Image (cartoon, rainbow, N blue to C red; front, side, top):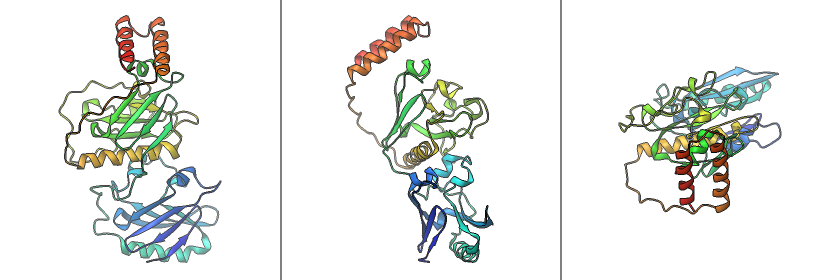
Length: 319
């Protein structure tokens, strides 16, 4: 189409095979939009287009993505509020006729599989490296592996016993994100093997998203045995929990989408044998701090003598 439709908080630029959504940067623009900046959405990724009345003299043009086409939408699992939906374009009511024109034009561009779930992601995920601060640790993603580094002020004793965690995306089958705007939010990694999965409703008190979000149909679970995972996310070393000001949507959701996209890509790629990575030396001050905290857990009776000795030896070996 080659046209531009400017709305509130975003502008849609129509191309021959896709629409480029550019988000404004401003104090009134949702922070998720500012974080995303822009997104190119192929018409093949859309299932339908709607035009509905909005609030306070506006109309809303919305492109509905196909299930499985956008890693951000898949990770969100229906938890985004309308005002943070990147597929909604809000326009003044006097531009309704123009909006109807573009809605009709978009409908003619929908692909033949618009009514079917997408077999792969068609919209790009936010790019790594990424990181954000959760309540009990700092999460990082470099494109190949996810790392959790625990905060001694917030992490549970179970996580301190397990130590800082690193998860290659090749060892994961999906991610589970619960919005920090809910009562108890978290980001939980799902290792391969269904025995290791925990129903989301049991992860923390209250309902949550469906466990295994991001598990692609047709991917068989691993047959290797895995240990049962803790029922609570605050006790699971494969999860970080959110809180007031920790893990905000505009940081944790793009992070979850980037990890999910990488997991899907690894599932689709042929298996390859990679040489083991050389271990990096740890900061002695950091090791000393962790041994000190481990001693406090031991004195409090939260860590047994054997656990204390084994974990202390492990930390010393990292020097």
